[in-house]
Amino acid sequence: MSWIKNFTIAIIEENYTNIGELIESVPHFETIEEAQTACALIQEALIIMEREKANTFDAMQKLKKTRHFIETSSESHLQEYRG
Image 1 (tube, one colour):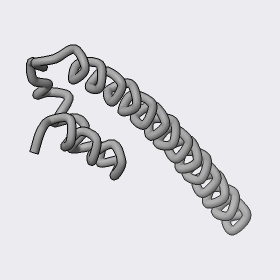
Image 2: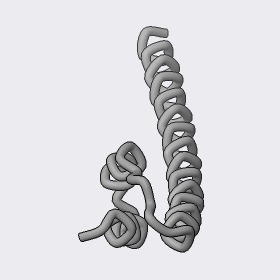
Image 3: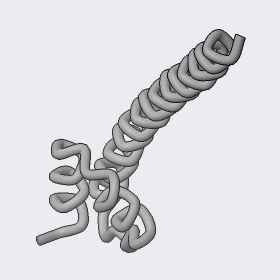
């Protein structure tokens, strides 16, 4: 299967591992059309990766808030118990 087909499938499946591997192995394209298609696919992959980056950041912030809440709740509970 060609690089362009594999990359298209990786984008459709939002398979971040395959996208990364394919980006690292971009071939030399024979025609301008192939190069333009690859360029468009790479731009789409960047959009997907930026969206995933934002989602990961949001999840990390939620975990950080939850951790802070649990830590402060545990501390206040222990203080009440000791008091």
